[in-house]
Length: 389
Image (cartoon, rainbow, N blue to C red; front, side, top):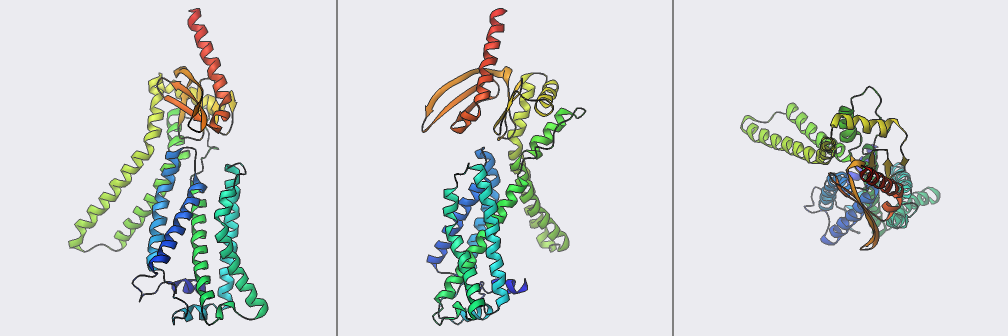
């Protein structure tokens, strides 16, 4: 791996103030923007707020990294003296073999991400496939150059003009960027998975369990914030402990760390606000302790009235599974909105007195058919009770 590390160090020229010219820098930024769009598609959730909460920190880190790379990266032009260093390094077949392994790593990561996209988009993955065509060309170029060198004993990168080598170096750079992006996307998907296997059982306190379940087990935004903020703050704190600042700098450093910790507390407070608001509705509905226990028993321990990937209907509650702590109490239901055309797609609504409007559109309407049927029966039953009394 040291050979690979030394090769990538050649991309950074200490004698160059700005690594690339303006035109190439624009291409690098555009490439990073396209990659981040793929990243967004990879981690997209039903809740826009949850998606942005998961996306914004990795996006900021990735774009900052792309910006630094665009400034510091230096691929010497064809015919220059420095490009000879790359040509000499690539004469090592071991290095080319490592670059081929990088190409195969991209194939594996892309295949995993493709399966995830196919599962989410219901086989509509044309856009995802098309966006990866340039990367497939880069990977094929890296593999072809290695195979040509192995079987013919000659190198395609040794031609005098250097244009093939120049293009090859950018292909390796773009492919490495996409590998990092796909790896980060899979890591974000991994730590943002909803831990649905952790369920409530008789004997557990409903209030404490729901707090853990919706703040940590189900809240991808909060876990995202804790991971990135916690990693940054832990690193900076450890660095200050191991290398204490000078006495004259200590005050400024302490103020900066306090500011960062306050920002972390503020972000965590904002990220947890929707869950706190949702769980607070149990008090508005009546006896919070009794209702939480009823919800846990119906949602976790009993068979629901109906259940699919989007919604779970129990006797007293409706749960939107894809949104954090989206719990609705049937006794809070007041009306059902009719089917109507909303801009480009059809939508329907359920109106709750305390929780507000639950508006569904497009595929959500189809997935919530059982919920609408149960809501209609519930309102009819309540109307019958009112008439009888």
